[in-house]
Length: 327
Ligand code: NAP
Image (cartoon, rainbow, N blue to C red):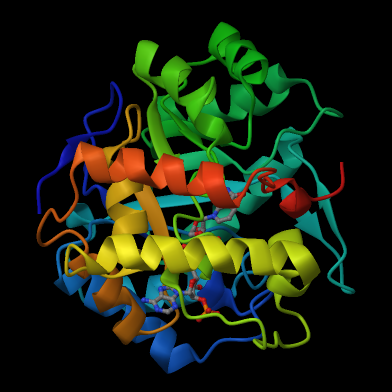
């Protein structure tokens, strides 16, 4: 699998990374731990080198599972990306907190769960307007200088928030939502990353499973599944997106590929994108997604056709804003 340089760091990553939000179970209607370990194991065995996780994913569970799965591999060959800055209480109520105290606590807990003594890519999960960015970045800079992290990243930041970071610390990566249905990052964020040699680690490549083409209008989501509150999966909007999916499926079938493959290859090919994160709850899903890398199926003309299909079917696209945790 070809590697891509991660911004101006000495890290090289595969163009696809495993997203491990789902394996924490929380917000995804639960997850099976053995399946989850297999998903991580198979991904690494098949050549994926980047694993993205966060303390908030299952309140530590996702990091623990990643830690368990990576034990059998050479740590130096794996690029671990994790995050900080979301706090939770006993009732699973979440708030943003990027204070010095919180970041230091989260960092040490992440090391323990992941069974490692350094993190490759350490990211602020969501901007926290209640804490000066210089306070958060002071801790990140110290971690970088002490070689406890190899890259400083932010997630869900806009351009002006990234510039604030760049005034006080080196910024190596951004993690924004980006997929065929949620293309907003392509307007300002990805060009900014490209111009400033900031790596882009894009998330929700399959639009939370919608772009696998497996859902129908009678699909029912379990209690505690974030798709129950995702406006794309509700009422008339759901039908509009499903109509679009049918067209995208035909486009993929004409190239003997799946719609998931189309979604992954499209995202990997967009200017400014370094690595696309794709979630998988078991080895079967992981393998199917990694297959997207084995051969190139689509041309620039096919990608233009996607825009035409979107124009004809989804005239008022919805973003990923519903995921933002309270300030
Ligand atoms: P995604 O990659 O768009 O979709 C992943 C989900 O689709 C899986 O959890 C699985 O859910 C389903 N799926 C995946 N492969 C499949 C296959 N081959 N066949 C059928 N179903 C399949 O969603 P995402 O998890 O939101 O994004 C990926 C990663 O990005 C996350 O895991 C996380 O690491 C990161 N992320 C970061 C942020 C942030 O704020 N920084 C936010 C979101 C995500 P089901 O089996 O339940 O359908």
